[in-house]
Every structure is written in structure tokens, then in C-alpha cells.
Length: 498
Image (cartoon, rainbow, N blue to C red):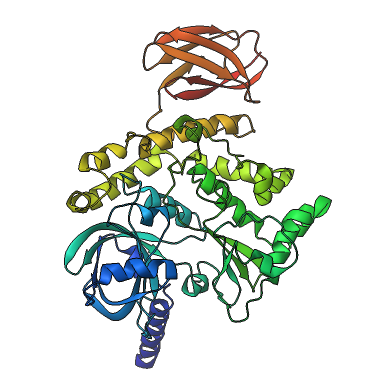
């Protein structure tokens, strides 16, 4: 009996240790709700000038970094970014490599990471909320946390601590569990357009981040060839080289959060990984700081909030992957299905507002204390809901974006209920429902414009300047489901019967 108990104890301990050692790198760090602390210390008297000089050389400066009380000596620090770096503020973004100068240490298994400065974001949340959504839905994307950053003892402000897409990222069992393949970054212009069959022709448009000694680009060339030159065999050809199901979800997420500083817009800011286990390329989303319509590409805020789920940057030939996939009914329907699923409740004020409020409460003190942030304390609080200049409010964006996409989904055969959004719940009451000849519509305010759309997205009725209630004759309507919408973005479905 004692031997049996001892064996059970040994087995339990073995499973416990196995579970501990099987933890994914970064799980502890990114799973901690608290704001972290990063202290960077440089002994060079002109360290800032050196960082500036090293930026165009993509070179690291040696320094000591202390993270949450643990010292990492002689690590590499450099500036990173484009517009987030080139702004006149001294609050620059950083990349840190713990092993750049021969070290072998790691932070919860992580050796390289990014400190992003919240440029163009009064809320400090665009990148965090978007990346959390990606990860919660099983998409390959970096994780994000918050950290206070100090330089030589001076508080430099609140930063986003963002995971690096590297071999550690690839080897994660929750991602690909494999780091042997080629990892390409679609920068500076990864439009996936065909040039020719010579690999060196693509060197100035993409970056190879793994297997650089071998420097074999033939797999990327094959992918781009199949995207552009497969003709009527496009579907079958693409299926052999790309995990299309996963890519479509990334595509939907880019669009959902209106991140146009990505493939569907500017044509870069992504990684694509040739997984040697599946022998297919996998998409990795990157650089989500322009989410929530912050990279407008000449569009107005209204156009950004009402961006079609099928949006492709013009000319459409400049984004051949999504343009050609939209021409395949099966791919287009999968994209619709992803939006339909996520709009049911995942992308809604009811789901996301509590997360936004929780994050705001967690970081507010550190935002207020940030001495060189890009916006005021009032802008931070205001932008959680309202626009700050041309920068759209987080919560109001979610509400307006969801309303538009639901109407677009309605015309594509997906019917999303409205009770999931606290902002619009009970905003419109229609009775009777279903109805035959007339419906009565009660609204939450006066001076409304009422529009009714059929399942093709066609406007079949419009009445302006109605009060808080109106009766509408629907006797001439065909049988079916309709969407009624007011100008305050509230909406409701009703059914016309015989």
C-alpha cells in the first residue's frame, strides 16, 4: 500500500514537473495582469546620440536592463520603427535583444522583445486590444503587455511590451511547434505581386529572418507564382502552398479593426512562415498599433467605420492575394462566415467594453504620470469613448463598425442579433414582429431618419425627421427578413409575412 502511494506521488510529481516545463515561453510574463517595469541603464556619456546614429545601421548599443527587478547585463538596445520613431518626441520605440552581445539569459524564455511608444494613440489601447483579440481567436500574432520604462533612472513613460516574431515564437506549440522553416517579413513592400522567377528580384521587397546563411528564397517565389499565375487552377494551386483558412481569419481581423497599415491597405507589416511540418505558408499578423482606423489612407472617419468587409486597396491588382481569393466563391463565403461568427458577440461593446474599462483602470495612473506622452490625461480618458481630433474613440468605433458590418452581413445571408451590444440594445422596438401590413416602430430619441433594407442590402424605405414613434406600411414588401436602421446607428431585424 505504501509502495502504491509512493508510486502515485512520484507519478503526480512527474506530471506536475512536466506541466511546468511544458509551459510556453512568455506565458508567465504576458499572463501577469500587473504593469511591468523596465529599467535601461547606459554608461556611455553620449548614449542617446549613439542610439540615433545606430538606427539607420540597424545596430544595437550595449546597456544593462532590469526587468521586474531582475538584472540582465550587457544586452543590446536599439531604436525601432518608422513614423513611431521619426516624430520629434524623445519617447522613441525600442527593440531589446538580451543575447545580442553573447549572453545566454532569457526573460521567461524570451530573448528579444519590443517596447512600443503609443504613437498616435491617446487611449494606449489600440495595439493591446487588437492583439489580444488575435490571440484569443487562435491567430498567430505577438502578445502584448504594458510596462513602465525608465532610462538611467528617469521615468520615460508607459510603453507596450510586445513579443518578437522569431524562432522562439515559431517553436511555441500554440503557434507552429516548429522553427526550421523560412520566416519572411513582408517589408518594406510585401505586396505579393509577381516580378519574375529570380529570387534576388524580391530581396528589396521582403526580409528573410531565418536560415539566412542558406538564403533560399525559392519557396517564397513559388508562393507568389501560384498567387499570381495559376489562372483557372488558382484555388487548387493556392491550397498546396498556403494555410488559407488561417489567412482568411487574419484577413478578417485586419478588416474588422480597420488596420490599413497591413496587407489589405499599405501592403506590408506581416510575417509569412513556411512551416516545414505542413509544407505550407502560415500568416503572422504584425504591428497592430494603427488598428481602429488610425491609418486612414485618405479615407474619412465615416468611410473607415463603414469599410466593406471585402475592401481591397486600390488598385486591386496591387494586392493579388486577396483580390484573387475574393473571386473564388468558397473563399469569399469563408470570409463572410468568419465575420458572421465574430460579430455575433466577440466584436461587440457588451464583450469588449468591460475589457477596455479594466485596462484603463490598470494603466491610468501610469498614463497620467507619463512625462512625455503624445496626448493629455483628458485625451486618454476621452478617447476611450469619443474622438480626439481625427483619432476615433475606441468604444464608439466598435459600436459604429459593428453596426455597419451587420448591415453588410445582412445582405450576404448572415443575420446577427442586436442584443449583444449594450449600446444599441432596445434602441428600436418593432411590433408586431413578424408583421403583415403595418409595423409600429418606437425609437429612443426624436428627429430620426429611418431606413429599411432587404437581404440584398437595397434600401426599400426611407423616412426623415420622424419622432420617437412611427407607423410604416409594409403591405407592398415581399416576404422575408428586413433590417430597420436609425441614424443613431441603432438597428433591428423584422420579418414580413403574408
